[in-house]
Image 1: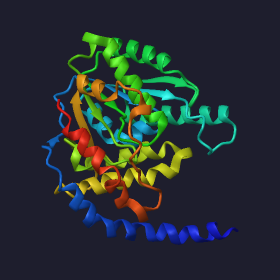
Image 2: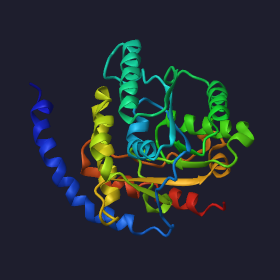
Image 3: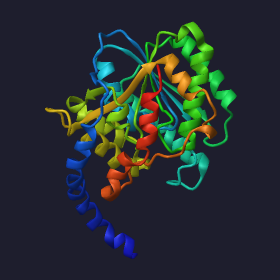
Length: 298
Protein backbone atom coordinates (compact mmCIF):
# COMPACT_ATOMS: atom_id res chain seq x y z
CA UNK A 1 0.00 0.00 0.00
CA UNK A 2 1.36 3.43 -0.95
CA UNK A 3 1.97 6.21 1.57
CA UNK A 4 -0.83 8.22 -0.06
CA UNK A 5 -3.28 5.34 0.40
CA UNK A 6 -2.28 4.95 4.03
CA UNK A 7 -2.76 8.64 4.63
CA UNK A 8 -6.20 8.82 3.01
CA UNK A 9 -8.28 7.67 6.07
CA UNK A 10 -6.66 10.36 8.22
CA UNK A 11 -7.35 13.00 5.56
CA UNK A 12 -11.04 11.99 5.39
CA UNK A 13 -11.29 12.07 9.19
CA UNK A 14 -9.74 15.56 9.36
CA UNK A 15 -11.87 17.09 6.59
CA UNK A 16 -15.01 17.86 8.69
CA UNK A 17 -12.90 19.59 11.34
CA UNK A 18 -11.11 21.73 8.79
CA UNK A 19 -14.44 22.67 7.21
CA UNK A 20 -15.80 23.75 10.61
CA UNK A 21 -12.72 25.90 11.08
CA UNK A 22 -13.53 27.83 7.90
CA UNK A 23 -17.27 28.31 8.47
CA UNK A 24 -16.92 31.49 10.53
CA UNK A 25 -14.65 33.38 8.09
CA UNK A 26 -16.67 32.20 5.09
CA UNK A 27 -19.85 33.31 6.86
CA UNK A 28 -18.21 36.72 7.21
CA UNK A 29 -17.53 36.80 3.46
CA UNK A 30 -21.11 35.67 2.80
CA UNK A 31 -22.50 38.53 4.84
CA UNK A 32 -20.36 41.22 3.23
CA UNK A 33 -22.19 41.61 -0.07
CA UNK A 34 -24.42 44.56 -0.89
CA UNK A 35 -26.71 42.89 -3.41
CA UNK A 36 -30.31 42.26 -2.51
CA UNK A 37 -30.92 38.52 -2.25
CA UNK A 38 -34.29 36.94 -3.06
CA UNK A 39 -35.64 33.60 -1.87
CA UNK A 40 -36.42 30.98 -4.51
CA UNK A 41 -40.06 30.25 -5.23
CA UNK A 42 -42.16 28.99 -8.11
CA UNK A 43 -45.85 29.48 -8.93
CA UNK A 44 -45.83 26.15 -10.81
CA UNK A 45 -46.33 25.45 -14.48
CA UNK A 46 -43.04 27.04 -15.56
CA UNK A 47 -40.86 25.79 -18.40
CA UNK A 48 -37.34 25.23 -17.04
CA UNK A 49 -34.21 24.33 -18.98
CA UNK A 50 -30.96 23.33 -17.27
CA UNK A 51 -27.82 23.46 -19.42
CA UNK A 52 -24.92 21.36 -18.12
CA UNK A 53 -21.49 21.25 -19.79
CA UNK A 54 -20.74 17.77 -18.43
CA UNK A 55 -22.80 14.91 -17.04
CA UNK A 56 -22.90 15.78 -13.29
CA UNK A 57 -22.70 19.60 -13.57
CA UNK A 58 -26.47 19.82 -13.30
CA UNK A 59 -26.33 17.78 -10.08
CA UNK A 60 -23.40 19.72 -8.64
CA UNK A 61 -24.89 23.08 -9.52
CA UNK A 62 -28.61 22.81 -8.97
CA UNK A 63 -29.91 19.33 -8.07
CA UNK A 64 -31.85 20.73 -5.13
CA UNK A 65 -33.60 23.40 -7.15
CA UNK A 66 -34.42 20.92 -9.90
CA UNK A 67 -36.14 18.75 -7.31
CA UNK A 68 -38.03 21.77 -5.98
CA UNK A 69 -39.12 22.78 -9.49
CA UNK A 70 -40.43 19.26 -10.13
CA UNK A 71 -42.31 19.33 -6.81
CA UNK A 72 -43.86 22.65 -7.87
CA UNK A 73 -45.18 21.00 -11.10
CA UNK A 74 -42.76 22.88 -13.35
CA UNK A 75 -41.70 21.23 -16.61
CA UNK A 76 -37.95 20.61 -16.31
CA UNK A 77 -35.60 19.55 -19.08
CA UNK A 78 -31.90 18.96 -18.55
CA UNK A 79 -29.54 19.33 -21.52
CA UNK A 80 -26.17 17.60 -21.11
CA UNK A 81 -23.81 19.13 -23.66
CA UNK A 82 -20.77 16.83 -23.68
CA UNK A 83 -20.28 13.13 -23.10
CA UNK A 84 -17.64 13.50 -20.37
CA UNK A 85 -15.23 11.15 -22.11
CA UNK A 86 -12.12 12.96 -20.83
CA UNK A 87 -12.68 11.97 -17.22
CA UNK A 88 -9.84 9.67 -16.20
CA UNK A 89 -11.93 7.41 -13.99
CA UNK A 90 -11.92 4.93 -16.90
CA UNK A 91 -9.03 4.88 -19.35
CA UNK A 92 -11.06 4.06 -22.47
CA UNK A 93 -12.85 7.29 -23.55
CA UNK A 94 -15.75 5.49 -25.24
CA UNK A 95 -16.38 3.40 -22.13
CA UNK A 96 -16.12 6.51 -19.96
CA UNK A 97 -18.71 8.29 -22.12
CA UNK A 98 -21.08 5.32 -21.94
CA UNK A 99 -20.79 5.16 -18.14
CA UNK A 100 -21.45 8.87 -17.77
CA UNK A 101 -24.52 8.72 -20.00
CA UNK A 102 -25.91 5.91 -17.86
CA UNK A 103 -25.18 7.91 -14.72
CA UNK A 104 -26.94 10.97 -16.19
CA UNK A 105 -29.98 8.83 -16.96
CA UNK A 106 -30.08 7.52 -13.39
CA UNK A 107 -29.76 11.02 -11.97
CA UNK A 108 -32.57 12.24 -14.22
CA UNK A 109 -34.81 9.40 -13.10
CA UNK A 110 -34.16 10.31 -9.47
CA UNK A 111 -35.03 13.94 -10.15
CA UNK A 112 -38.16 12.89 -12.11
CA UNK A 113 -37.59 15.54 -14.75
CA UNK A 114 -39.73 15.74 -17.87
CA UNK A 115 -36.89 14.97 -20.29
CA UNK A 116 -33.13 14.45 -20.48
CA UNK A 117 -31.66 16.04 -23.60
CA UNK A 118 -28.41 14.16 -24.19
CA UNK A 119 -26.56 16.30 -26.73
CA UNK A 120 -23.49 14.16 -26.12
CA UNK A 121 -20.88 16.17 -28.03
CA UNK A 122 -17.42 14.59 -27.68
CA UNK A 123 -15.79 16.39 -24.77
CA UNK A 124 -13.07 18.76 -25.91
CA UNK A 125 -13.67 18.06 -29.60
CA UNK A 126 -16.76 20.08 -30.53
CA UNK A 127 -17.32 23.38 -32.33
CA UNK A 128 -19.15 26.38 -30.89
CA UNK A 129 -21.25 26.74 -34.05
CA UNK A 130 -22.49 23.16 -33.66
CA UNK A 131 -23.61 23.71 -30.10
CA UNK A 132 -25.17 27.10 -30.84
CA UNK A 133 -27.38 25.46 -33.46
CA UNK A 134 -28.39 22.60 -31.15
CA UNK A 135 -29.15 24.91 -28.24
CA UNK A 136 -31.05 27.41 -30.38
CA UNK A 137 -33.38 24.67 -31.62
CA UNK A 138 -33.88 23.43 -28.06
CA UNK A 139 -34.62 26.94 -26.79
CA UNK A 140 -37.12 27.55 -29.58
CA UNK A 141 -38.79 24.23 -28.80
CA UNK A 142 -39.01 24.64 -25.03
CA UNK A 143 -39.43 28.45 -24.82
CA UNK A 144 -38.14 28.37 -21.24
CA UNK A 145 -39.21 30.78 -18.54
CA UNK A 146 -36.01 29.99 -16.64
CA UNK A 147 -32.62 28.76 -17.84
CA UNK A 148 -30.05 27.43 -15.36
CA UNK A 149 -26.60 27.98 -16.82
CA UNK A 150 -22.83 27.86 -16.38
CA UNK A 151 -20.94 31.13 -16.57
CA UNK A 152 -17.63 32.94 -16.81
CA UNK A 153 -17.30 32.73 -13.00
CA UNK A 154 -15.41 29.48 -13.39
CA UNK A 155 -12.04 28.08 -14.43
CA UNK A 156 -12.94 25.15 -16.67
CA UNK A 157 -12.50 25.87 -20.42
CA UNK A 158 -15.39 23.58 -21.33
CA UNK A 159 -17.71 25.49 -18.98
CA UNK A 160 -16.57 28.74 -20.57
CA UNK A 161 -17.25 27.44 -24.07
CA UNK A 162 -20.73 26.21 -23.14
CA UNK A 163 -21.62 29.52 -21.47
CA UNK A 164 -20.44 31.40 -24.56
CA UNK A 165 -22.39 29.08 -26.87
CA UNK A 166 -25.53 29.41 -24.76
CA UNK A 167 -25.32 33.20 -24.93
CA UNK A 168 -25.11 33.09 -28.72
CA UNK A 169 -27.98 30.60 -28.85
CA UNK A 170 -30.16 32.79 -26.62
CA UNK A 171 -29.44 35.71 -28.91
CA UNK A 172 -30.25 33.66 -32.02
CA UNK A 173 -33.49 32.34 -30.50
CA UNK A 174 -34.77 35.91 -30.28
CA UNK A 175 -38.39 36.22 -29.17
CA UNK A 176 -38.47 32.62 -27.92
CA UNK A 177 -36.21 33.54 -25.00
CA UNK A 178 -36.47 37.33 -24.74
CA UNK A 179 -38.47 37.16 -21.50
CA UNK A 180 -36.47 34.32 -19.96
CA UNK A 181 -34.53 34.63 -16.73
CA UNK A 182 -31.10 33.04 -16.59
CA UNK A 183 -29.85 31.68 -13.29
CA UNK A 184 -26.11 31.05 -13.10
CA UNK A 185 -25.24 28.14 -10.83
CA UNK A 186 -22.03 27.31 -8.99
CA UNK A 187 -19.71 24.49 -10.01
CA UNK A 188 -16.90 24.44 -7.42
CA UNK A 189 -16.30 28.22 -7.80
CA UNK A 190 -18.52 30.18 -5.34
CA UNK A 191 -20.42 33.17 -6.65
CA UNK A 192 -20.01 34.73 -3.20
CA UNK A 193 -22.29 37.44 -1.80
CA UNK A 194 -20.96 39.84 -4.44
CA UNK A 195 -22.92 38.12 -7.22
CA UNK A 196 -25.50 35.95 -5.44
CA UNK A 197 -28.97 37.50 -5.68
CA UNK A 198 -31.15 34.37 -5.38
CA UNK A 199 -30.93 31.58 -2.82
CA UNK A 200 -32.87 28.35 -2.44
CA UNK A 201 -33.21 26.39 0.79
CA UNK A 202 -32.83 22.80 -0.38
CA UNK A 203 -32.67 21.28 3.10
CA UNK A 204 -36.11 19.62 2.65
CA UNK A 205 -34.81 17.70 -0.42
CA UNK A 206 -31.36 17.00 0.98
CA UNK A 207 -31.70 13.22 1.04
CA UNK A 208 -32.87 13.02 -2.57
CA UNK A 209 -30.23 15.55 -3.60
CA UNK A 210 -27.62 13.29 -2.06
CA UNK A 211 -28.94 10.36 -4.09
CA UNK A 212 -28.73 12.40 -7.29
CA UNK A 213 -25.15 13.43 -6.64
CA UNK A 214 -24.14 9.88 -5.80
CA UNK A 215 -25.73 8.60 -9.00
CA UNK A 216 -22.54 9.90 -10.61
CA UNK A 217 -20.47 7.14 -9.03
CA UNK A 218 -17.54 7.68 -11.41
CA UNK A 219 -17.20 11.31 -10.27
CA UNK A 220 -17.06 10.89 -6.50
CA UNK A 221 -14.27 13.45 -6.09
CA UNK A 222 -16.75 16.23 -6.97
CA UNK A 223 -19.29 15.27 -4.32
CA UNK A 224 -17.52 16.69 -1.21
CA UNK A 225 -17.13 20.07 -2.93
CA UNK A 226 -20.81 20.14 -3.87
CA UNK A 227 -21.80 19.37 -0.29
CA UNK A 228 -19.49 22.01 1.17
CA UNK A 229 -20.77 24.74 -1.16
CA UNK A 230 -24.30 24.07 0.06
CA UNK A 231 -23.26 23.97 3.71
CA UNK A 232 -21.17 27.13 3.44
CA UNK A 233 -24.10 28.85 1.75
CA UNK A 234 -26.36 27.89 4.65
CA UNK A 235 -24.19 29.45 7.39
CA UNK A 236 -25.49 32.95 6.60
CA UNK A 237 -29.20 32.04 6.35
CA UNK A 238 -30.94 31.10 9.60
CA UNK A 239 -32.87 27.86 9.66
CA UNK A 240 -31.12 26.24 6.71
CA UNK A 241 -28.61 23.41 6.47
CA UNK A 242 -28.22 23.22 2.69
CA UNK A 243 -28.49 26.29 0.49
CA UNK A 244 -28.02 26.71 -3.26
CA UNK A 245 -26.90 30.12 -4.51
CA UNK A 246 -27.60 31.67 -7.90
CA UNK A 247 -26.87 34.79 -9.92
CA UNK A 248 -30.14 35.63 -11.65
CA UNK A 249 -30.39 38.02 -14.60
CA UNK A 250 -32.44 38.67 -17.73
CA UNK A 251 -31.43 36.71 -20.81
CA UNK A 252 -30.19 39.91 -22.44
CA UNK A 253 -27.80 40.47 -19.54
CA UNK A 254 -26.40 36.94 -19.78
CA UNK A 255 -25.89 37.42 -23.51
CA UNK A 256 -24.01 40.66 -22.96
CA UNK A 257 -21.72 39.08 -20.36
CA UNK A 258 -20.92 35.97 -22.42
CA UNK A 259 -21.14 37.04 -26.08
CA UNK A 260 -17.42 37.73 -26.40
CA UNK A 261 -14.87 34.96 -26.84
CA UNK A 262 -13.85 33.16 -23.62
CA UNK A 263 -10.26 33.90 -24.63
CA UNK A 264 -11.00 37.48 -23.57
CA UNK A 265 -12.34 36.54 -20.12
CA UNK A 266 -9.94 36.92 -17.18
CA UNK A 267 -8.92 33.50 -15.86
CA UNK A 268 -8.87 34.57 -12.22
CA UNK A 269 -11.14 32.18 -10.30
CA UNK A 270 -10.34 29.24 -8.06
CA UNK A 271 -12.62 26.37 -7.09
CA UNK A 272 -12.91 24.20 -4.01
CA UNK A 273 -10.54 21.25 -3.78
CA UNK A 274 -11.51 17.80 -2.54
CA UNK A 275 -9.86 18.49 0.84
CA UNK A 276 -11.07 21.74 2.46
CA UNK A 277 -7.69 23.08 3.63
CA UNK A 278 -7.66 25.96 1.10
CA UNK A 279 -11.43 26.64 0.92
CA UNK A 280 -11.30 30.37 1.82
CA UNK A 281 -9.12 31.00 -1.23
CA UNK A 282 -12.10 30.12 -3.44
CA UNK A 283 -13.89 33.15 -1.98
CA UNK A 284 -10.86 35.46 -1.98
CA UNK A 285 -9.32 34.70 -5.37
CA UNK A 286 -11.18 36.61 -8.08
CA UNK A 287 -12.83 39.14 -5.74
CA UNK A 288 -11.86 42.07 -7.99
CA UNK A 289 -13.39 40.45 -11.06
CA UNK A 290 -16.58 39.54 -9.21
CA UNK A 291 -16.93 43.14 -8.09
CA UNK A 292 -16.30 44.37 -11.62
CA UNK A 293 -19.00 42.07 -13.01
CA UNK A 294 -21.46 43.14 -10.30
CA UNK A 295 -20.82 46.82 -11.02
CA UNK A 296 -21.41 46.59 -14.77
CA UNK A 297 -24.55 48.49 -15.82
CA UNK A 298 -27.64 46.39 -16.55
